[in-house]
Length: 219
Image (cartoon, rainbow, N blue to C red):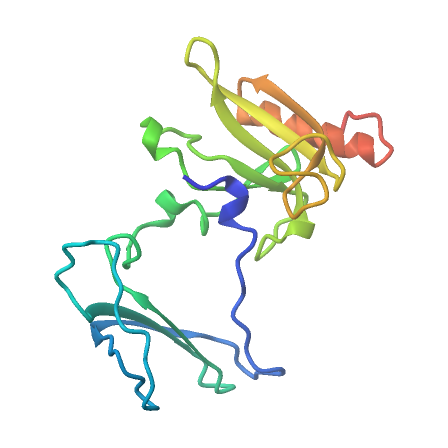
């Protein structure tokens, strides 16, 4: 399972040509047989050949290739993404319910909570709150690092009950968060845990943001 920030941050947005009159992508996927040659296709020199960590490999130079074609007919931009179609990297079709990304944010305590990948491995896919959340102060079309004001993550208490932890007030040198200060990891100036509900965590974040803005922390 990915951390909630992995669902939104670090992804590259495919770009259209400047001033594209109708920026819209047409996306197609194709899987077909492909072949690795030991000679270059364009020049008479050694090509990539075939290597496999499996000593009993039976597919030789042949493999299944998956291609993703992303085209905008308005500006003429085309992106082609290719890779080997294996059990580890093949195409998967699912729902935003099991991805988190793509679901509508939840509005709570004046904030917007964007869900990450649900905790399916803990058997709570059908609960009301199976997700961790990235928190923003405004509803956005695409969550960026600059939008993020906090995070809410879940854990287990001593008796197995679900608890919630929250981080708030982004800070490059903050003492809370994963990763090291000064890196691309999200760091926070404030953190708290042991909260019983997502609502309590959202209210706590709102209070920390208010206090950081010079308020009394009451929202």
